Length: 290
Length: 338
Image 1 (spheres, rainbow over the protein chains, first blue to last red):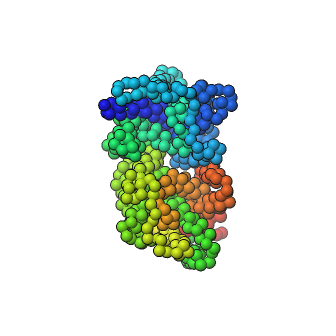
Image 2 (image 1 turned 180 degrees about the vertical axis):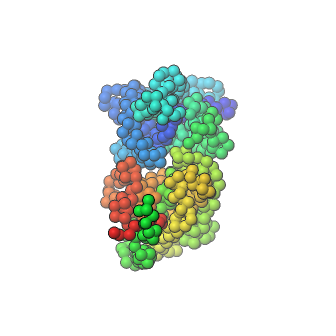
Image 3 (image 1 turned 120 degrees about the horizontal axis):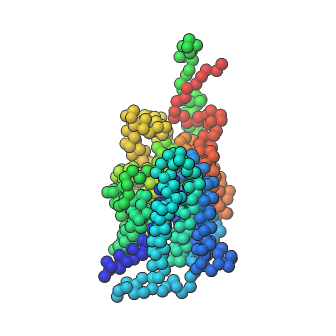
Protein backbone atom coordinates (compact mmCIF):
# COMPACT_ATOMS: atom_id res chain seq x y z
CA UNK A 1 0.00 0.00 0.00
CA UNK A 2 2.98 2.31 0.44
CA UNK A 3 3.42 2.50 -3.33
CA UNK A 4 -0.16 3.64 -3.72
CA UNK A 5 0.43 6.21 -1.02
CA UNK A 6 3.59 7.53 -2.67
CA UNK A 7 1.79 7.74 -6.00
CA UNK A 8 -1.18 9.69 -4.64
CA UNK A 9 1.00 12.06 -2.61
CA UNK A 10 3.29 12.55 -5.59
CA UNK A 11 0.43 13.38 -7.93
CA UNK A 12 -1.06 15.87 -5.47
CA UNK A 13 2.20 17.73 -4.86
CA UNK A 14 3.07 17.43 -8.56
CA UNK A 15 -0.06 19.38 -9.44
CA UNK A 16 1.15 22.18 -7.23
CA UNK A 17 4.59 22.15 -8.89
CA UNK A 18 2.95 22.34 -12.30
CA UNK A 19 0.86 25.34 -11.22
CA UNK A 20 4.05 26.95 -10.01
CA UNK A 21 5.99 26.07 -13.13
CA UNK A 22 3.61 26.97 -15.95
CA UNK A 23 4.43 30.69 -15.74
CA UNK A 24 8.16 29.96 -15.80
CA UNK A 25 7.64 27.68 -18.79
CA UNK A 26 5.55 30.30 -20.63
CA UNK A 27 8.06 33.10 -20.10
CA UNK A 28 10.88 30.90 -21.25
CA UNK A 29 8.94 29.69 -24.26
CA UNK A 30 7.94 33.17 -25.40
CA UNK A 31 10.84 35.44 -24.43
CA UNK A 32 13.64 32.90 -23.86
CA UNK A 33 13.98 34.37 -20.40
CA UNK A 34 14.39 32.38 -17.22
CA UNK A 35 12.94 34.54 -14.52
CA UNK A 36 15.11 33.68 -11.51
CA UNK A 37 12.80 35.83 -9.34
CA UNK A 38 9.82 33.62 -10.21
CA UNK A 39 9.79 31.82 -6.86
CA UNK A 40 10.12 35.08 -4.94
CA UNK A 41 7.14 36.60 -6.77
CA UNK A 42 5.05 33.71 -5.44
CA UNK A 43 6.24 34.43 -1.91
CA UNK A 44 5.42 38.13 -2.33
CA UNK A 45 1.90 37.15 -3.43
CA UNK A 46 1.49 35.03 -0.31
CA UNK A 47 2.66 37.93 1.89
CA UNK A 48 0.20 40.27 0.17
CA UNK A 49 -2.60 37.77 0.82
CA UNK A 50 -1.70 37.51 4.51
CA UNK A 51 -0.80 41.10 5.37
CA UNK A 52 -2.37 43.45 2.86
CA UNK A 53 -5.60 41.74 1.77
CA UNK A 54 -7.13 41.89 5.30
CA UNK A 55 -6.40 45.63 5.33
CA UNK A 56 -8.51 45.99 2.20
CA UNK A 57 -11.30 44.02 3.96
CA UNK A 58 -10.78 40.94 1.83
CA UNK A 59 -10.82 37.65 3.77
CA UNK A 60 -7.68 35.56 3.22
CA UNK A 61 -9.69 32.75 1.59
CA UNK A 62 -10.80 35.08 -1.20
CA UNK A 63 -7.59 37.08 -1.41
CA UNK A 64 -6.63 35.40 -4.67
CA UNK A 65 -9.53 37.22 -6.39
CA UNK A 66 -7.64 40.48 -5.84
CA UNK A 67 -4.02 39.35 -5.71
CA UNK A 68 -4.06 37.37 -8.98
CA UNK A 69 -5.27 40.25 -11.22
CA UNK A 70 -3.00 42.64 -9.32
CA UNK A 71 0.00 40.45 -10.09
CA UNK A 72 -1.07 40.19 -13.72
CA UNK A 73 -0.88 43.96 -13.91
CA UNK A 74 2.43 43.99 -12.04
CA UNK A 75 3.82 41.41 -14.47
CA UNK A 76 2.91 43.57 -17.44
CA UNK A 77 4.52 46.65 -15.91
CA UNK A 78 7.71 44.88 -14.79
CA UNK A 79 8.08 43.30 -18.22
CA UNK A 80 7.58 46.52 -20.14
CA UNK A 81 10.07 48.41 -17.98
CA UNK A 82 12.87 46.50 -16.26
CA UNK A 83 12.79 43.14 -18.03
CA UNK A 84 12.42 44.58 -21.53
CA UNK A 85 15.42 46.82 -20.85
CA UNK A 86 17.55 43.81 -19.96
CA UNK A 87 16.22 41.65 -22.82
CA UNK A 88 17.23 44.47 -25.17
CA UNK A 89 20.81 44.04 -23.97
CA UNK A 90 21.30 40.27 -24.01
CA UNK A 91 20.15 37.03 -22.31
CA UNK A 92 23.18 37.24 -20.02
CA UNK A 93 21.96 40.56 -18.56
CA UNK A 94 18.45 39.16 -18.04
CA UNK A 95 19.86 36.38 -15.88
CA UNK A 96 21.88 38.81 -13.78
CA UNK A 97 18.96 41.21 -13.41
CA UNK A 98 16.39 38.59 -12.41
CA UNK A 99 18.83 37.00 -9.96
CA UNK A 100 19.53 40.43 -8.50
CA UNK A 101 15.80 41.08 -8.16
CA UNK A 102 15.37 37.71 -6.47
CA UNK A 103 17.95 38.51 -3.80
CA UNK A 104 16.62 42.03 -3.30
CA UNK A 105 13.00 40.84 -2.94
CA UNK A 106 13.94 38.10 -0.48
CA UNK A 107 15.90 40.49 1.72
CA UNK A 108 13.24 43.20 1.53
CA UNK A 109 10.66 40.69 2.79
CA UNK A 110 13.13 39.71 5.51
CA UNK A 111 13.59 43.34 6.55
CA UNK A 112 9.85 44.08 6.58
CA UNK A 113 8.23 40.87 7.83
CA UNK A 114 11.18 39.08 9.59
CA UNK A 115 12.14 35.45 9.06
CA UNK A 116 9.12 34.08 10.94
CA UNK A 117 7.01 31.49 9.15
CA UNK A 118 3.57 32.66 7.99
CA UNK A 119 0.58 30.91 6.47
CA UNK A 120 -2.59 31.90 4.67
CA UNK A 121 -5.44 31.25 7.09
CA UNK A 122 -8.53 29.68 5.53
CA UNK A 123 -10.12 28.34 8.69
CA UNK A 124 -10.91 24.72 9.46
CA UNK A 125 -11.05 23.73 5.79
CA UNK A 126 -7.29 23.26 5.70
CA UNK A 127 -7.32 20.07 7.78
CA UNK A 128 -10.33 18.40 6.13
CA UNK A 129 -9.65 15.26 4.10
CA UNK A 130 -11.28 12.06 2.90
CA UNK A 131 -10.07 8.50 3.11
CA UNK A 132 -9.08 6.78 -0.12
CA UNK A 133 -7.84 3.51 1.36
CA UNK A 134 -6.88 2.19 4.78
CA UNK A 135 -3.74 4.33 4.98
CA UNK A 136 -4.23 6.99 2.29
CA UNK A 137 -5.90 10.29 3.04
CA UNK A 138 -6.43 13.04 0.48
CA UNK A 139 -6.77 16.58 1.76
CA UNK A 140 -9.36 18.76 0.06
CA UNK A 141 -6.93 21.64 -0.20
CA UNK A 142 -4.32 19.60 -2.08
CA UNK A 143 -7.02 18.23 -4.37
CA UNK A 144 -8.29 21.76 -5.06
CA UNK A 145 -4.77 22.90 -5.93
CA UNK A 146 -4.35 19.96 -8.31
CA UNK A 147 -7.71 20.81 -9.88
CA UNK A 148 -6.68 24.47 -10.18
CA UNK A 149 -3.42 23.42 -11.86
CA UNK A 150 -5.23 21.30 -14.44
CA UNK A 151 -7.72 24.11 -15.01
CA UNK A 152 -5.01 26.76 -15.44
CA UNK A 153 -2.94 24.58 -17.77
CA UNK A 154 -6.05 23.73 -19.81
CA UNK A 155 -7.09 27.36 -20.04
CA UNK A 156 -3.58 28.39 -21.02
CA UNK A 157 -3.46 25.70 -23.70
CA UNK A 158 -6.81 26.87 -25.08
CA UNK A 159 -5.71 30.49 -24.97
CA UNK A 160 -2.49 29.75 -26.87
CA UNK A 161 -4.12 27.51 -29.50
CA UNK A 162 -7.54 29.10 -30.06
CA UNK A 163 -7.43 32.84 -29.48
CA UNK A 164 -5.91 35.40 -31.78
CA UNK A 165 -3.56 36.79 -29.13
CA UNK A 166 -2.46 33.27 -28.25
CA UNK A 167 -1.61 32.50 -31.84
CA UNK A 168 0.44 35.66 -32.20
CA UNK A 169 2.26 34.87 -28.97
CA UNK A 170 3.20 31.47 -30.37
CA UNK A 171 4.26 33.07 -33.62
CA UNK A 172 6.54 35.47 -31.75
CA UNK A 173 8.03 32.64 -29.73
CA UNK A 174 8.75 30.65 -32.92
CA UNK A 175 10.26 33.46 -34.94
CA UNK A 176 10.26 36.96 -33.55
CA UNK A 177 11.51 38.81 -36.62
CA UNK A 178 9.04 37.11 -38.96
CA UNK A 179 6.13 37.81 -36.60
CA UNK A 180 7.24 41.43 -36.32
CA UNK A 181 7.27 41.75 -40.11
CA UNK A 182 3.64 40.56 -40.07
CA UNK A 183 2.77 43.37 -37.69
CA UNK A 184 3.06 41.74 -34.27
CA UNK A 185 3.95 44.17 -31.48
CA UNK A 186 6.28 41.83 -29.63
CA UNK A 187 6.85 44.07 -26.64
CA UNK A 188 3.14 44.18 -25.88
CA UNK A 189 2.90 40.40 -26.33
CA UNK A 190 5.87 39.87 -24.02
CA UNK A 191 3.97 41.99 -21.49
CA UNK A 192 0.90 39.78 -21.80
CA UNK A 193 2.99 36.63 -21.38
CA UNK A 194 4.61 38.11 -18.27
CA UNK A 195 1.17 39.13 -16.95
CA UNK A 196 -0.07 35.53 -17.30
CA UNK A 197 3.13 34.25 -15.73
CA UNK A 198 2.88 36.58 -12.72
CA UNK A 199 -0.86 35.88 -12.28
CA UNK A 200 -0.37 32.10 -12.23
CA UNK A 201 2.60 32.32 -9.90
CA UNK A 202 0.54 34.50 -7.54
CA UNK A 203 -2.12 31.79 -7.46
CA UNK A 204 0.61 29.20 -6.83
CA UNK A 205 2.09 31.34 -4.06
CA UNK A 206 -1.24 31.70 -2.25
CA UNK A 207 -1.87 27.96 -2.61
CA UNK A 208 1.56 27.34 -1.15
CA UNK A 209 0.72 29.62 1.77
CA UNK A 210 -2.49 27.68 2.39
CA UNK A 211 -0.81 24.27 2.28
CA UNK A 212 2.29 25.02 4.32
CA UNK A 213 4.24 27.70 6.12
CA UNK A 214 6.29 30.14 4.10
CA UNK A 215 9.13 32.54 4.88
CA UNK A 216 11.10 35.08 2.81
CA UNK A 217 13.57 32.35 1.83
CA UNK A 218 10.90 29.96 0.45
CA UNK A 219 11.21 31.40 -3.05
CA UNK A 220 14.52 29.80 -4.00
CA UNK A 221 13.52 26.21 -3.24
CA UNK A 222 10.25 26.66 -5.10
CA UNK A 223 12.01 28.08 -8.15
CA UNK A 224 14.19 24.96 -8.22
CA UNK A 225 11.17 22.63 -8.05
CA UNK A 226 9.34 24.57 -10.75
CA UNK A 227 12.39 24.56 -12.97
CA UNK A 228 12.93 20.84 -12.43
CA UNK A 229 9.30 20.18 -13.36
CA UNK A 230 9.69 22.19 -16.58
CA UNK A 231 12.90 20.42 -17.61
CA UNK A 232 11.72 16.91 -16.71
CA UNK A 233 8.48 17.43 -18.62
CA UNK A 234 10.15 19.03 -21.59
CA UNK A 235 10.61 22.65 -22.55
CA UNK A 236 7.73 24.19 -24.43
CA UNK A 237 5.12 21.59 -23.51
CA UNK A 238 2.46 22.69 -20.99
CA UNK A 239 1.07 19.22 -20.34
CA UNK A 240 4.65 18.00 -20.18
CA UNK A 241 5.10 20.41 -17.25
CA UNK A 242 2.20 18.72 -15.44
CA UNK A 243 3.71 15.27 -16.04
CA UNK A 244 7.14 16.62 -15.04
CA UNK A 245 5.70 18.06 -11.83
CA UNK A 246 4.04 14.76 -11.00
CA UNK A 247 7.22 12.79 -11.78
CA UNK A 248 9.17 15.16 -9.52
CA UNK A 249 6.53 14.83 -6.79
CA UNK A 250 6.64 11.03 -6.94
CA UNK A 251 10.47 11.00 -6.86
CA UNK A 252 10.44 13.28 -3.79
CA UNK A 253 7.81 11.20 -2.00
CA UNK A 254 9.78 8.05 -2.77
CA UNK A 255 12.92 9.70 -1.41
CA UNK A 256 11.06 10.72 1.74
CA UNK A 257 9.90 7.11 2.09
CA UNK A 258 13.50 5.80 1.90
CA UNK A 259 14.77 8.40 4.36
CA UNK A 260 13.06 11.69 5.31
CA UNK A 261 16.34 13.52 4.63
CA UNK A 262 16.36 12.33 0.99
CA UNK A 263 13.09 13.95 -0.13
CA UNK A 264 14.56 16.85 -2.10
CA UNK A 265 17.72 14.97 -3.03
CA UNK A 266 15.76 12.30 -4.93
CA UNK A 267 13.93 15.01 -6.87
CA UNK A 268 17.28 16.61 -7.78
CA UNK A 269 18.68 13.23 -8.82
CA UNK A 270 15.71 12.58 -11.12
CA UNK A 271 16.30 16.00 -12.67
CA UNK A 272 20.02 15.34 -13.21
CA UNK A 273 19.21 11.90 -14.61
CA UNK A 274 16.82 13.41 -17.16
CA UNK A 275 19.48 15.98 -18.08
CA UNK A 276 22.00 13.20 -18.64
CA UNK A 277 19.78 10.77 -20.54
CA UNK A 278 17.16 12.89 -22.26
CA UNK A 279 18.09 16.58 -22.02
CA UNK A 280 15.09 17.73 -24.06
CA UNK A 281 12.78 16.27 -21.38
CA UNK A 282 9.99 13.72 -21.67
CA UNK A 283 7.80 15.68 -24.10
CA UNK A 284 10.22 18.33 -25.35
CA UNK A 285 11.50 19.05 -28.81
CA UNK A 286 15.25 19.02 -29.25
CA UNK A 287 15.46 22.43 -30.90
CA UNK A 288 13.77 24.04 -27.90
CA UNK A 289 17.01 23.71 -25.92
CA UNK A 290 18.63 27.05 -25.50
CA UNK B 1 44.85 55.06 -52.59
CA UNK B 2 48.36 56.37 -52.58
CA UNK B 3 47.59 58.16 -49.32
CA UNK B 4 46.74 54.90 -47.60
CA UNK B 5 49.85 53.24 -48.92
CA UNK B 6 52.00 56.06 -47.70
CA UNK B 7 51.14 55.36 -44.03
CA UNK B 8 54.20 53.82 -42.49
CA UNK B 9 53.39 50.46 -40.88
CA UNK B 10 55.81 51.24 -38.08
CA UNK B 11 53.70 54.20 -36.95
CA UNK B 12 51.36 51.92 -34.97
CA UNK B 13 52.59 50.21 -31.87
CA UNK B 14 51.06 47.16 -30.19
CA UNK B 15 51.42 47.10 -26.45
CA UNK B 16 49.95 45.58 -23.31
CA UNK B 17 50.59 48.02 -20.54
CA UNK B 18 49.72 51.60 -19.90
CA UNK B 19 52.74 51.83 -17.64
CA UNK B 20 56.07 50.10 -17.80
CA UNK B 21 55.71 46.41 -16.80
CA UNK B 22 58.37 46.98 -14.15
CA UNK B 23 56.12 49.59 -12.58
CA UNK B 24 53.21 47.11 -12.42
CA UNK B 25 55.43 44.37 -11.02
CA UNK B 26 56.88 46.75 -8.44
CA UNK B 27 53.41 47.88 -7.41
CA UNK B 28 52.21 44.30 -7.02
CA UNK B 29 55.26 43.39 -4.92
CA UNK B 30 54.78 46.46 -2.68
CA UNK B 31 51.09 45.67 -2.13
CA UNK B 32 51.89 42.01 -1.52
CA UNK B 33 54.56 42.92 1.02
CA UNK B 34 52.13 45.22 2.85
CA UNK B 35 49.40 42.59 3.11
CA UNK B 36 51.89 39.91 4.19
CA UNK B 37 53.07 42.13 7.03
CA UNK B 38 49.55 43.40 7.85
CA UNK B 39 48.98 41.27 10.99
CA UNK B 40 51.99 42.95 12.58
CA UNK B 41 50.96 46.43 11.46
CA UNK B 42 47.18 46.59 11.70
CA UNK B 43 44.79 46.14 14.64
CA UNK B 44 43.34 42.65 15.22
CA UNK B 45 39.81 43.71 14.22
CA UNK B 46 41.11 44.94 10.87
CA UNK B 47 42.93 41.69 10.34
CA UNK B 48 39.77 39.60 10.61
CA UNK B 49 37.85 42.00 8.34
CA UNK B 50 40.64 41.63 5.79
CA UNK B 51 40.39 37.82 6.07
CA UNK B 52 36.72 37.95 5.07
CA UNK B 53 37.57 40.49 2.39
CA UNK B 54 40.08 38.15 0.77
CA UNK B 55 37.62 35.25 0.84
CA UNK B 56 35.17 37.42 -1.10
CA UNK B 57 37.93 38.51 -3.51
CA UNK B 58 38.70 34.85 -4.26
CA UNK B 59 35.03 33.99 -4.86
CA UNK B 60 34.35 37.07 -6.98
CA UNK B 61 37.48 36.52 -9.08
CA UNK B 62 36.43 32.95 -9.78
CA UNK B 63 32.87 33.96 -10.63
CA UNK B 64 34.20 36.66 -12.93
CA UNK B 65 36.41 34.11 -14.68
CA UNK B 66 33.35 31.92 -15.27
CA UNK B 67 30.81 34.56 -16.25
CA UNK B 68 32.86 37.54 -17.38
CA UNK B 69 35.42 35.63 -19.44
CA UNK B 70 33.80 32.27 -20.31
CA UNK B 71 30.15 33.42 -20.42
CA UNK B 72 28.89 30.83 -17.91
CA UNK B 73 26.52 32.40 -15.39
CA UNK B 74 26.77 29.99 -12.48
CA UNK B 75 24.62 30.39 -9.39
CA UNK B 76 26.01 27.20 -7.92
CA UNK B 77 29.58 28.14 -7.00
CA UNK B 78 28.59 28.05 -3.32
CA UNK B 79 28.52 24.28 -3.88
CA UNK B 80 32.28 24.25 -4.39
CA UNK B 81 32.81 26.65 -1.49
CA UNK B 82 30.95 24.14 0.68
CA UNK B 83 32.78 21.14 -0.75
CA UNK B 84 36.11 22.89 -0.17
CA UNK B 85 35.17 23.51 3.45
CA UNK B 86 34.07 19.92 3.97
CA UNK B 87 37.09 18.45 2.18
CA UNK B 88 39.28 20.39 4.61
CA UNK B 89 37.22 19.14 7.52
CA UNK B 90 37.48 15.56 6.25
CA UNK B 91 41.27 15.73 5.83
CA UNK B 92 41.61 17.36 9.26
CA UNK B 93 39.47 14.63 10.83
CA UNK B 94 41.85 12.12 9.23
CA UNK B 95 44.70 13.81 11.11
CA UNK B 96 46.09 16.33 8.62
CA UNK B 97 46.92 19.86 9.73
CA UNK B 98 43.97 22.02 8.50
CA UNK B 99 46.33 24.61 6.99
CA UNK B 100 48.22 21.93 5.08
CA UNK B 101 44.88 20.48 3.95
CA UNK B 102 43.81 23.69 2.13
CA UNK B 103 45.51 23.00 -1.24
CA UNK B 104 44.48 19.34 -1.15
CA UNK B 105 40.87 20.30 -0.45
CA UNK B 106 40.94 22.68 -3.42
CA UNK B 107 42.26 19.93 -5.68
CA UNK B 108 39.52 17.57 -4.47
CA UNK B 109 36.98 20.21 -5.61
CA UNK B 110 38.64 20.29 -9.02
CA UNK B 111 38.42 16.51 -9.33
CA UNK B 112 34.74 16.52 -8.33
CA UNK B 113 34.06 19.24 -10.90
CA UNK B 114 35.32 17.18 -13.87
CA UNK B 115 32.42 14.69 -14.10
CA UNK B 116 29.93 17.49 -13.34
CA UNK B 117 31.06 19.44 -16.42
CA UNK B 118 29.92 16.59 -18.68
CA UNK B 119 26.40 17.12 -17.39
CA UNK B 120 26.35 20.91 -17.17
CA UNK B 121 28.17 21.95 -20.33
CA UNK B 122 25.41 20.55 -22.50
CA UNK B 123 23.27 23.38 -21.20
CA UNK B 124 23.28 27.02 -22.12
CA UNK B 125 22.24 30.29 -20.59
CA UNK B 126 19.58 30.07 -17.93
CA UNK B 127 19.46 26.29 -18.07
CA UNK B 128 23.11 26.11 -17.15
CA UNK B 129 22.53 28.60 -14.29
CA UNK B 130 19.67 26.79 -12.62
CA UNK B 131 21.32 23.39 -13.15
CA UNK B 132 24.45 24.61 -11.32
CA UNK B 133 22.16 25.62 -8.48
CA UNK B 134 20.60 22.12 -8.42
CA UNK B 135 24.08 20.57 -8.30
CA UNK B 136 25.07 22.81 -5.38
CA UNK B 137 21.83 22.00 -3.57
CA UNK B 138 22.40 18.27 -4.11
CA UNK B 139 25.98 18.53 -2.83
CA UNK B 140 24.70 20.16 0.35
CA UNK B 141 21.98 17.53 0.82
CA UNK B 142 24.53 14.75 0.36
CA UNK B 143 26.90 16.29 2.93
CA UNK B 144 23.94 16.71 5.32
CA UNK B 145 23.43 12.95 5.35
CA UNK B 146 27.06 12.09 6.25
CA UNK B 147 27.17 11.63 10.01
CA UNK B 148 31.00 11.47 10.07
CA UNK B 149 31.12 15.10 8.88
CA UNK B 150 28.62 16.23 11.51
CA UNK B 151 25.42 15.92 9.48
CA UNK B 152 23.12 18.89 9.83
CA UNK B 153 24.54 20.14 13.13
CA UNK B 154 28.12 20.55 11.95
CA UNK B 155 31.49 19.83 13.47
CA UNK B 156 34.40 21.73 14.93
CA UNK B 157 37.54 21.81 12.79
CA UNK B 158 40.10 19.66 14.67
CA UNK B 159 43.78 20.52 15.00
CA UNK B 160 43.29 24.21 15.81
CA UNK B 161 42.74 24.07 19.57
CA UNK B 162 46.47 23.94 20.34
CA UNK B 163 46.95 27.41 18.82
CA UNK B 164 46.45 30.57 20.88
CA UNK B 165 43.69 32.93 19.61
CA UNK B 166 46.25 35.49 18.42
CA UNK B 167 48.30 32.93 16.52
CA UNK B 168 45.15 31.43 15.05
CA UNK B 169 43.98 34.86 13.90
CA UNK B 170 47.37 35.53 12.27
CA UNK B 171 47.56 32.13 10.62
CA UNK B 172 44.01 32.35 9.30
CA UNK B 173 44.73 35.78 7.89
CA UNK B 174 47.89 34.59 6.16
CA UNK B 175 46.04 31.58 4.76
CA UNK B 176 43.28 33.74 3.26
CA UNK B 177 45.78 36.30 1.95
CA UNK B 178 48.03 33.71 0.32
CA UNK B 179 44.94 31.95 -1.03
CA UNK B 180 43.80 35.20 -2.62
CA UNK B 181 47.31 35.95 -3.93
CA UNK B 182 47.65 32.52 -5.55
CA UNK B 183 44.17 32.73 -7.08
CA UNK B 184 44.73 36.27 -8.41
CA UNK B 185 48.21 35.63 -9.82
CA UNK B 186 47.02 32.30 -11.27
CA UNK B 187 44.00 33.93 -12.94
CA UNK B 188 46.16 36.75 -14.27
CA UNK B 189 48.71 34.37 -15.80
CA UNK B 190 45.94 32.15 -17.19
CA UNK B 191 44.30 35.10 -18.91
CA UNK B 192 47.60 36.33 -20.35
CA UNK B 193 48.23 32.90 -21.83
CA UNK B 194 46.75 31.30 -24.95
CA UNK B 195 43.66 30.46 -22.91
CA UNK B 196 42.96 34.16 -22.42
CA UNK B 197 43.06 34.71 -26.18
CA UNK B 198 40.76 31.71 -26.72
CA UNK B 199 38.33 33.09 -24.17
CA UNK B 200 38.17 36.53 -25.75
CA UNK B 201 37.62 35.02 -29.20
CA UNK B 202 34.80 32.85 -27.82
CA UNK B 203 33.24 35.79 -26.06
CA UNK B 204 33.29 37.97 -29.16
CA UNK B 205 32.00 35.38 -31.62
CA UNK B 206 31.68 31.77 -30.62
CA UNK B 207 30.87 30.41 -34.08
CA UNK B 208 33.83 32.18 -35.65
CA UNK B 209 36.07 30.91 -32.86
CA UNK B 210 34.87 27.34 -33.39
CA UNK B 211 35.41 27.50 -37.13
CA UNK B 212 38.91 28.84 -36.56
CA UNK B 213 39.66 25.69 -34.59
CA UNK B 214 39.18 26.90 -31.01
CA UNK B 215 38.23 24.01 -28.74
CA UNK B 216 35.33 25.83 -27.12
CA UNK B 217 33.89 23.08 -24.93
CA UNK B 218 37.31 21.95 -23.72
CA UNK B 219 38.20 25.52 -22.80
CA UNK B 220 34.89 25.96 -20.95
CA UNK B 221 35.46 22.69 -19.12
CA UNK B 222 38.93 23.81 -18.06
CA UNK B 223 37.62 27.17 -16.82
CA UNK B 224 34.83 25.48 -14.88
CA UNK B 225 37.34 23.18 -13.17
CA UNK B 226 39.67 26.09 -12.39
CA UNK B 227 36.76 28.03 -10.89
CA UNK B 228 35.83 24.99 -8.81
CA UNK B 229 39.40 24.80 -7.47
CA UNK B 230 39.37 28.52 -6.69
CA UNK B 231 36.05 28.34 -4.89
CA UNK B 232 37.42 25.28 -3.09
CA UNK B 233 40.28 27.46 -1.80
CA UNK B 234 37.72 30.03 -0.60
CA UNK B 235 35.71 27.31 1.16
CA UNK B 236 38.81 25.78 2.74
CA UNK B 237 40.08 29.06 4.19
CA UNK B 238 36.52 29.93 5.25
CA UNK B 239 36.26 26.65 7.16
CA UNK B 240 39.59 27.26 8.91
CA UNK B 241 38.60 30.82 9.79
CA UNK B 242 35.19 29.97 11.28
CA UNK B 243 36.25 27.20 12.47
CA UNK B 244 32.87 25.50 13.15
CA UNK B 245 31.84 23.82 9.89
CA UNK B 246 28.11 23.60 9.26
CA UNK B 247 26.23 22.91 5.98
CA UNK B 248 23.97 25.98 6.31
CA UNK B 249 27.02 28.26 6.62
CA UNK B 250 29.30 26.78 3.98
CA UNK B 251 26.71 26.25 1.21
CA UNK B 252 24.93 29.63 1.53
CA UNK B 253 23.15 30.89 -1.56
CA UNK B 254 24.22 34.29 -0.31
CA UNK B 255 27.77 33.52 -1.50
CA UNK B 256 26.42 33.24 -5.03
CA UNK B 257 24.68 36.60 -4.63
CA UNK B 258 27.82 38.24 -3.19
CA UNK B 259 30.17 37.01 -5.90
CA UNK B 260 27.73 37.97 -8.62
CA UNK B 261 26.99 41.47 -7.32
CA UNK B 262 30.64 42.12 -6.52
CA UNK B 263 31.88 41.21 -9.99
CA UNK B 264 29.07 43.04 -11.72
CA UNK B 265 29.46 46.30 -9.83
CA UNK B 266 33.24 46.19 -10.05
CA UNK B 267 33.27 45.28 -13.72
CA UNK B 268 32.81 41.93 -15.45
CA UNK B 269 35.60 40.70 -17.65
CA UNK B 270 38.37 42.65 -15.93
CA UNK B 271 40.84 41.44 -13.32
CA UNK B 272 40.55 44.66 -11.31
CA UNK B 273 36.72 44.71 -11.27
CA UNK B 274 36.03 42.02 -8.66
CA UNK B 275 38.67 43.53 -6.34
CA UNK B 276 37.12 46.99 -6.66
CA UNK B 277 33.64 45.44 -6.18
CA UNK B 278 34.81 43.66 -3.03
CA UNK B 279 36.10 46.94 -1.61
CA UNK B 280 32.71 48.60 -2.27
CA UNK B 281 30.87 45.63 -0.79
CA UNK B 282 32.90 45.67 2.42
CA UNK B 283 32.62 49.42 2.83
CA UNK B 284 28.84 49.13 2.48
CA UNK B 285 28.59 46.11 4.76
CA UNK B 286 30.73 47.65 7.50
CA UNK B 287 28.91 50.98 7.44
CA UNK B 288 25.44 49.37 7.46
CA UNK B 289 26.19 46.56 9.88
CA UNK B 290 23.47 47.62 12.32
CA UNK B 291 20.83 47.59 9.60
CA UNK B 292 20.39 43.87 9.08
CA UNK B 293 19.83 42.81 5.49
CA UNK B 294 19.75 46.34 4.05
CA UNK B 295 23.35 46.27 2.78
CA UNK B 296 22.39 43.33 0.55
CA UNK B 297 19.24 45.10 -0.65
CA UNK B 298 21.18 48.24 -1.58
CA UNK B 299 24.05 46.28 -3.11
CA UNK B 300 21.66 44.06 -5.09
CA UNK B 301 19.67 47.02 -6.43
CA UNK B 302 22.94 48.71 -7.39
CA UNK B 303 23.97 45.55 -9.25
CA UNK B 304 20.68 45.49 -11.19
CA UNK B 305 21.13 49.14 -12.15
CA UNK B 306 24.73 48.53 -13.21
CA UNK B 307 23.76 45.46 -15.26
CA UNK B 308 21.22 47.43 -17.27
CA UNK B 309 22.81 50.84 -17.61
CA UNK B 310 26.55 50.33 -17.09
CA UNK B 311 27.22 46.67 -18.00
CA UNK B 312 30.99 47.12 -17.99
CA UNK B 313 30.88 48.02 -14.33
CA UNK B 314 32.79 50.64 -12.41
CA UNK B 315 36.25 49.55 -13.51
CA UNK B 316 35.04 49.33 -17.10
CA UNK B 317 33.86 52.92 -16.88
CA UNK B 318 37.15 54.08 -15.37
CA UNK B 319 39.15 52.22 -18.01
CA UNK B 320 37.11 53.63 -20.87
CA UNK B 321 37.36 57.13 -19.50
CA UNK B 322 41.03 57.31 -18.55
CA UNK B 323 42.56 54.51 -20.65
CA UNK B 324 44.39 52.93 -17.72
CA UNK B 325 45.15 49.27 -17.19
CA UNK B 326 46.63 48.27 -13.86
CA UNK B 327 46.84 44.55 -14.63
CA UNK B 328 46.68 44.30 -18.41
CA UNK B 329 45.84 40.95 -20.01
CA UNK B 330 45.14 42.05 -23.58
CA UNK B 331 47.00 43.96 -26.27
CA UNK B 332 46.15 47.37 -27.60
CA UNK B 333 47.09 49.15 -30.76
CA UNK B 334 48.44 52.60 -30.06
CA UNK B 335 48.69 55.43 -32.48
CA UNK B 336 51.67 57.70 -32.05
CA UNK B 337 51.00 61.12 -30.61
CA UNK B 338 50.70 63.75 -33.31
